[in-house]
Image (cartoon, rainbow, N blue to C red):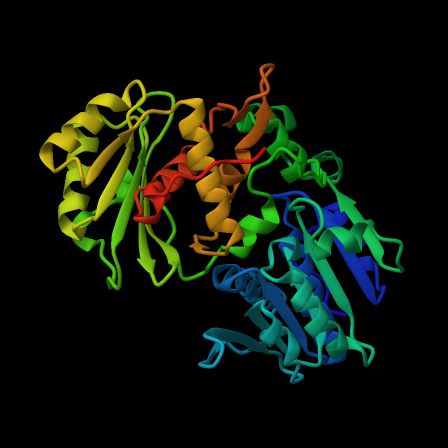
Length: 425
C-alpha cells in the first residue's frame, strides 16, 4: 500500500488501521476528519483498484471533499487524472471523478436518493447527519453495497432521530469511532480547548459541535430535522454588509417580494431578510447581516432595497433602538408597505408560531448555513410562572437569534401574515 505523505493524528491512524466492512465515526468539528476519510479512499483505491463514491451534504461540500482526494493523490505522487465533471440534467447535480492509473475511480456527489441509488462501489457518507432525506438516502443506498463493498459514515451530530443518530447509537455490528475535542487534542490536534469554548459562548452548540452529544430539547421551536427539510442548495448564502453591493445584487423575480428587519447596533446584528413568494413557497432571496453599522447606513441600504425590488411589504423590529429605523422607513414610503412591530411576548408568540407553521408545511426554502441553522434552533418555548407561553433565545456573543427574527418578520410581512394565528401551547 502507498504510504501517506504526512504524519497522521492518532484518531486518523486508528481509522485507517480499521478494515471493518461497516465503519462509522462520530467526530467533532475542525479536526481533519474529512482529511482522514478521503485518504482511506485513495489508499484503498490505489491498492485494490475498486471504485469509491463519496456522498456529501451539498455541492460545495462535495467539491471540498474531492479537492482533498486530489491533494492526497498529488502528495503521494499518484498520477491520477484531474477532476472531471459530468452534469446530470435530470437531477441537477454534478459528478466529480478522479481516475487513478489502475483504473479505479473516486467519485464525489451531493447526496440525494437518486444519486445514492446509481452506483456499485465502496461508499463514504460525509457529514451524514446533515444529508437531506437521510432515511430515503439510506434506503436507496444500502443495496448498492450488498456485493461486499465497504461503507464509511462520518459526521458531527445534528440532534436526535435522524439516520446517523440511530446507526451510531444502535445495537449493530458497526465498528464505531468517537472523537470529541478532548480526544482530538489528546491525539495531537493543536486546539486550545478553553479558548474555543469561551469564544463560542454557547453551551448547547459546544455540547453538540465539540463534545459530540446528541441533543434536541423538547422546548426548541424548530428542531434540526425540520430545519434540514427546508434547506435548499440553490438558495444563496448570507452576505455581510461590508461585502454587499446593491448594484450587483439581483435575481429573476417571479412573485412578490417581502422583507423582515431585525434591528441591532452594538450588541446584536441587524439582519435584513428578503423572501419571494413563488406559488405557496417562500424562497429566501437575500439575507444581509450588518454588524455595528451606523443607523444612517442601515436606513440607506433598506430604502435602496425597497425601491430596487419594489418590496410589497416590510416588517421592522421597532423595539428600543429599532424605533427610529421603523419610523423613518414608514415616513419615506407608506404605512401600508412598511410596518413597525414591537417585540412583546404576544407578538413574539405570533412571529414564532407563523414561522413554525411555514416550516411544518415545508413552505420555506432557506440556505444551507450553519449560522442560520443555529439561530433557527436557538429559539425555545418556555412557560412563565403565570402559565403564559414565551418564545425567546439566549443572548450570546454570536447574537440573539437575529437571523430567526428577521426571517419571522419577513413571513409576517406577507399577505398571509396579516391573518391572526393563535398558538396552542
